[in-house]
Image (cartoon, rainbow, N blue to C red; front, side, top):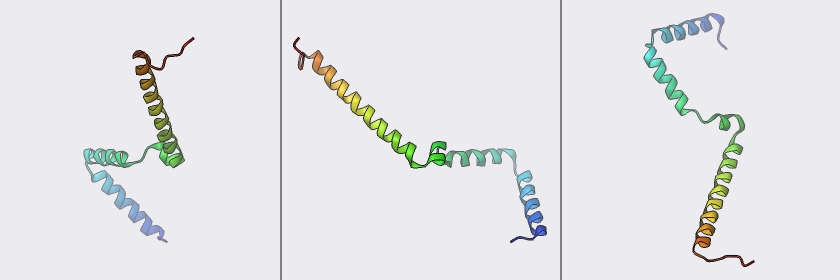
Length: 83
């Protein structure tokens, strides 16, 4: 454990380092950290939202392929229903 004097010394050195650093470098570092962070859904709920979105994307692409296939078949005169 740090003693209180050591902690105050550490805080002052960190604060002085932050103040002495140019504002442009602070912005760059902040943007870099923000870019490296994972999405908020992943941080808050783990893998469950990601797995659901992957599953949903797969279903949507299958539906799209089926719709394209059946639409092409109907336009070509194949697979028509008789009433």
